[in-house]
Image (cartoon, rainbow, N blue to C red; front, top):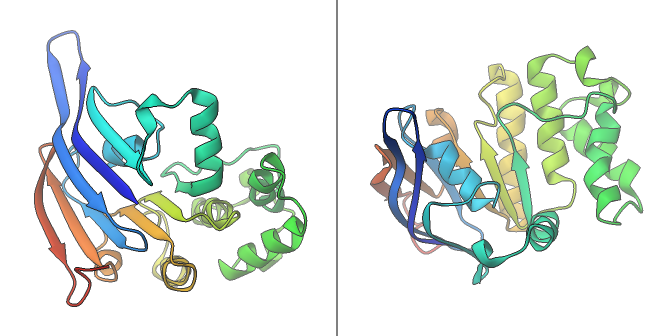
Length: 230
């Protein structure tokens, strides 16, 4: 489902070049729940952005379902993301002029899948504990509530791939459990492939696989018991 080959990412500063990723070879099969961990600055979020096609590598390749995304036009990549990828950003990226319901409904409207969209949006918002917040705008929501709206939006199109950057990082323990339960349901009920950047051991403990980055390299790649073939 997801594969990288010799993936590198570097940036040039005024003083010198900084190598963020230094040759990542990785395969994540369909339906696997992989957690990416590591200290700050290890390249976790950069790797996630490259997998989503939101950034371009300095060298190397990313394949989704055997298709090298670096060769796709911007329009084709946008279509691919719309069909296959749900992404939960660390900073929410909700549209401030839309209500919670409208933010979740938006990807369905943009892809022509709006039939039954309002019911789907409300169902997802209810599942993340926001039943009474359908008509609230982002400014009227707490940071944790905005993150849950963003998560519901990522699930709107039932994506076969979900990528998330610290999806429970801004949530209290009760809200975090709601989000974790929804993530696990998407993985188990719909067979979604999930790649999550996290610092939370409780979230990583539920994953099939934990990939640890350090200094732009894979320092460890460990499978849960019985999950190596998933």
